[in-house]
Length: 76
Image (cartoon, rainbow, N blue to C red; front, side, top):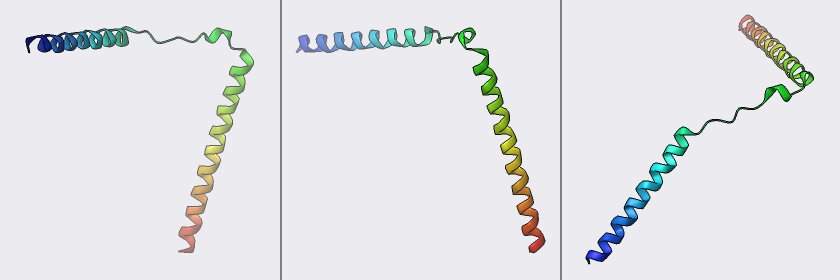
């Protein structure tokens, strides 16, 4: 019986070491930094234009919602 206990203990020790190594690698890993300089300026400018258009659409929707609320209040 003593033999099986030692085998189990050895397995537990190996699992602890494996877990510890994984956590160290995980905590010390550096995130990948993308190289933005390789992107073309056109791509960046088009994305900025797209963002401005989205904001304009949101503002228009908000105005429409406010107008609808006012109409409902005036009816009621």
